Amino acid sequence: MTSVDSTSLIINNVTQYFFDNVTIEQVQDITKTIHSPQKEPGPIIKKDRPWERVPYLTVNGWSILYDKTKGEFKCWYEDFPVDPQKVEREKVLYCVSSTFTGYACSSDGLNWEKPELDYLEVDGHKTNIVLGNKPPFHTLESITVFEDTLEPDPGKRFKMLLTRYINAKDRTKKELAETLSVKPGFDTSNDEVRIEMHCSEDGIKWTPSGELPRYGQHGNGLGDAYTFFIDEDTGIYRFLTRAAGMLSVHYDERRPKTNSFFPPTFPHDIARMNKRRVFQSESKDLVHWSCPKCVLTPDVQEDNLDDSYYGMVQFKMGEIYIGMLNVLHEVSNTINVRLVYSRDGWNWHHLNQRQPWLTTSADSWDKYMVNISSPPIPVGDELFVFHGGASCHHDWWITGLYENLPVPEAHDINMTRFGIGLAKMRLDGFVSIDATEMREGVMITRALITSGNKLELNAACGQDGYVEVEVTDADEKILKGFSRADCDTFKGDKVKTIISWKGKTEIPHGAYLRLRFFMKNASLYSFKFT
Image (cartoon, rainbow, N blue to C red):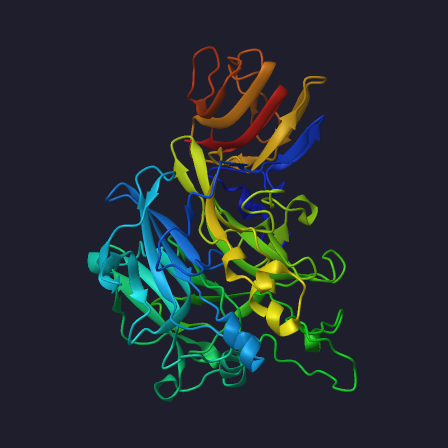
């Protein structure tokens, strides 16, 4: 596996997970399970204010963070109105203007309010709008918000990246696409589209950060689907996006082509790769960025012919980078989420044979699309996984009139309903190593290097289930007093439990340790030395 060698076994006090098998040397009667979160009833955020047109709660149309200083959840979302009458009248692909960013907050993540703020009034009433829908921000999109943990100025701790259209009233999608793809690296001082960073102390009042970000040879021009990840270990900002000109490939006009929103694609032709895919860029200052490099592309054999990678959220667990990959299935016009992982944040691997990790729910508010735009948030012993969803399809509501599609949402904008939902799962409970109630399973780790001398597990046992641990040195010699017979059997269900041997918890050792896990009707999610 790329980026893995013997130094990966120097684990010190870092939690070890089972996304890959790097720490595992031997197993018997052991299997691996990928766990998905359980959805709560929803949506918890939806259109419910008279000034909202289409809260566009899709990939990169919303962000949710937890503000520890105030003890509250914060949400920012994009309102993305389409003018279907103008689409039909002028036969354009679609028409968008007067967009804005709304704000909501919650004390518990379940019950949300949209406060009345001072930025913009509508019909004499204060609104929850924090940016957009008035000069100089008549039209903006692709908003993403993150808390900058590297920022020393508390007045700038929240950052919002957005695409701003200057004097962009009633411009068509075709015109916008041409601006972005034909002129990457254009001088934004003379153009109508630019990417800007804004800062805020409270997430409500925003000010431009000053110098515009630039992305290598792409200058200030990119695609969309923006998300950020801060690697605090290195002090580097990582930016996941789409590259400018991602769709700009040669099409042979002699070949037949339909009127579809999606262009023809070309399996096995790298020169004409035009599917949506994930690019990554890095920066130390949020202004000077490396040229975006493609890190995830649909595979012509493993993915379906119509699968494309809409965007991805990245975060870190221990030394593992986790990606929540939003996959668009173009023909069914639906979106679901896969899990991917990496040891270095650049070379990514799919979990669970590319099967969905979070998927749509039949006959529900998210029956056609689910998406993730923000990392999960730890709350006690759980992870809160906020997800967008929709009872409409990806683009039929936007382009249906232009393409003359026989779908109701193309003719009635009120059938375009997005929302944000909440799903919950065990803290760090993405992957487990399992033994069933039928046979005892055994897992033996490689020789690990650690300075810790206490063993902490995240584990759960079923009825009559157990976990017992034996400790050896690198040469398989059992440490005196730390055999299986000495182990105080764990039979519970805890996200953090210290294993003991006849009451002793401190393991005397030099540097190398092996662990032998004996399990029955039990799941092991992680282990660490402390």
